[in-house]
Image (tube, rainbow, N blue to C red; front, side):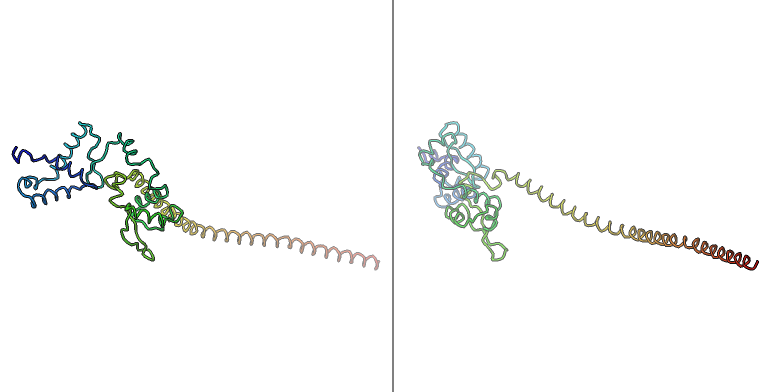
Length: 274
């Protein structure tokens, strides 16, 4: 059997690399391995030095079809920006017993809640996590750092420049997702955030409109107040004139009474003289 006849196919080489790797293997890593192998060993390995991304993707598809058709219990899955061999979900019960996965999960409920906050809001500071959960998370963050599910991604501009936390590559591997965009509910969260921002903008605009309306109403009330004041002054003047008018008849009446008294006095004098 000649050396050429023993050369494996591209899908076989990729399958062997994925089987041996402990972590997902990226497209860049696969290409690098083929190039390094050609430089180091030469010969027939140089035939694989020029493989392209499309050739690798096609080989992985063929490998997956073979695994599925032969029902070997594993398949290739793209996860954490790379490829890895994973077990079929319908074999999970036996694997849980084999790997003693029936025991309590290493991630407690508080740890999962903290991890979810970091995953959806990253980069995030510890104080923001605590404001959401309502409890201190110092120890939980230490545990997540030890498990390499989160990492420090920088410092915030807040006073004291606290640490900013984010998820790691191992986080994606642990939950079997390709990228953070595959987190469940991210589209819904973006929609809710968009609606919340829209409501806040509408409320701010309403507040501005209300403030402008109050100023306009005050300006409109000033002429009305002036007119009302003038009307009150006019009514007051009319009342004063009304109160003075009865005095004139009284004076006339008093004058007529004096004339009557003088006439009576003249009559009495005539009677005495007669």
